[in-house]
Image (spheres, rainbow, N blue to C red):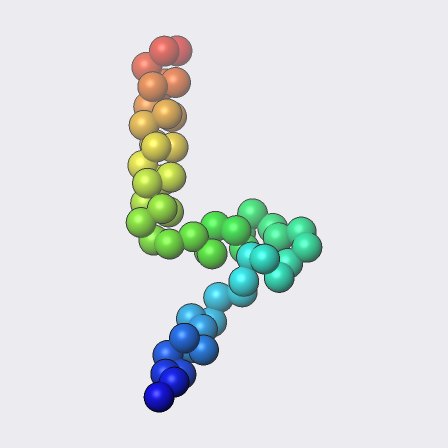
Length: 53
């Protein structure tokens, strides 16, 4: 028996389908864990730059 679960999409556009995805499309295509990691690293980098100045 073949399952249809593999055919279900999550509603997000497939990044491979777009020829020139915008930054917003690429950001929303990321998993929430990767978004949180990128945001946290950005905050740490901004803090370090602020401390260096």
